[in-house]
Image (cartoon, rainbow over all chains, first blue to last red):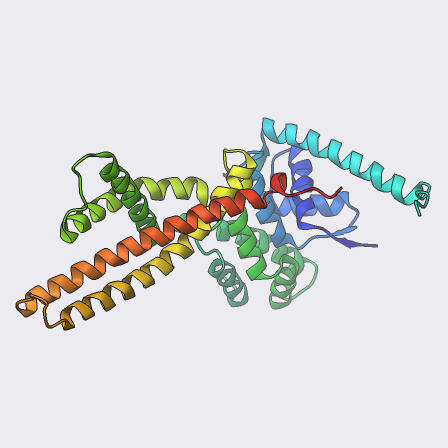
Length: 113
Length: 240
């Protein structure tokens, strides 16, 4: 099974990846793929709008760096505000997941008619 | 660079409307870097260069969507110089009107005097106004440093101001030109010489255009602000 990711979910995934260490765009895409076990189908170009949103909100900071002998790459690091945001999003997601689980797996509401 | 990749990058760049040149260069440089690694991966797994480029492009996505989403995420389209000057002119006229009303004895003056004042005021205000609007009003509402309903009001007001100014400019120019034409056709008009006719026509039409821009633009902005605030979820009736 594989699912197309919603645009709104991509910033949360990107934030979770960058929280574990500085990353550039390509590495973020590979990490999302690895962690999801190829469950999520991500158009890799959609990472960049997500990165811009997180930069605008100052949850991450990007800077050009030369790594080894390769060309310069823009590497992103999480900020303090980004870590706080990730904690908040994790909590929000847990509550949402619980609500869906209750809804799908729980007892149906009694009819009011 | 591979011509297919170059064309793809150019298509993305074409959709980065409103970003500055250095912002565009940064985006394209970063995306090109990402695609080059994808292409190298493809070639390592046995694809030809052309196949690898095609696969990388397919994996990356549609240029129009990527460009549009990047522009939106980067804070929306930046304002052009002409737009900034128009906004500045409206702000300048608003300030001058307020000063004129608040200062006893400061009448409307001759059209030429008024036009000079407005042009000067507009030019000065455009410097401050353009900076302010670039910084705040072109950003998504959530990024504004104000409460969300006021942010939404300002954002809608800004959009309406742009539309109102355009309508006001066109309407004012037509109104001025028609008025002057009728005045000149009046047999009782006391006009001497072609130079005086040209000066009168230019001045009156320009003043009517500026005032049309000001009145319709400001009116639209006020209506936009009210609409924006009232459309906010906080002010919408909640289902019971």
